[in-house]
Amino acid sequence: MRKIAVLFLLALAAWAGEFKVEKVFPVQGKVSLRGSITAGRIRVKVWDKPQIRVFMEVKYKGRKPEVEIYREDDEVYFRLRGTGKSKFCLFSCEEISYFARVEVDVPKKYSLHLRTVSADIQVQGGEMEEGEIHTVSGEIALEGISAEDLMLKSVSGPIKARGDGVEEVYASSVSGDIVLSFSRLGKAKVNSVSGDVYLEGSSSRRWCVSSVSGDLHLRPLSRVCYMKLSSTGGDVVVDSMRISGKVERRDCEDGLYIKARTVSGDVLLKIKH
Image (cartoon, rainbow, N blue to C red):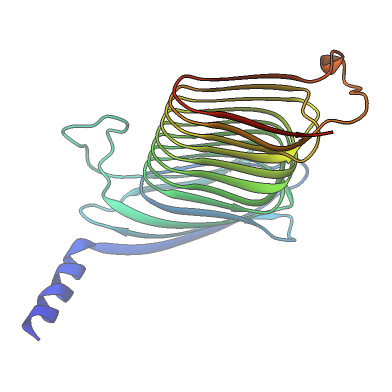
């Protein structure tokens, strides 16, 4: 009984305060969301209203964090900052003195720019004109999206993105795995140091994928005219690639080009005519 009481007091002591804030902004036409937090979770989902809704639930220790939620022209911003400074810092000199749960509702068509340190980021649905997401150790997860231009960057967190289609995507991670699966995946540039890379989608453009020690797994659902694959210590696997007909794109006039390189790993290509 005493042990349970001690644990309860420790849990209370972990967070000195808690608050909630919510703001709703009417929007028309082009919509852009920009946000940044240090620790916690950000979830963005689509709703059927011409508005952007930002809701925050924050638990903190020490002084209350600074909150900014505002609109400027056609862009909505949110920002949450800790109140202390760390003695030793590598990626961020903000003390992680809070845990925030951020829920954002956006219209079907939008642009997205998010930055976090250790917070996870979840995006569900919608049509992105432009998406740019950066995190250090948080997880990036996108589900049921389509995008014209997509940039996903992480240091140690995994990156997962699935949806209808992306015209151009750039994804990079140091030690986290990268999984990209789209029914239509155009130009893709993916870099990893020690994480594995999984790429799937139909395309008639370029895939450039590299990793130092991670494996590369690629599954084109239709022809890809240009593939440049490189892994120093990992395997390179291209599965179920189909070659048929004449490629009509100008940058694919010479047909299929595959360049796969590895130092200590294996290369396996499965090609169906």
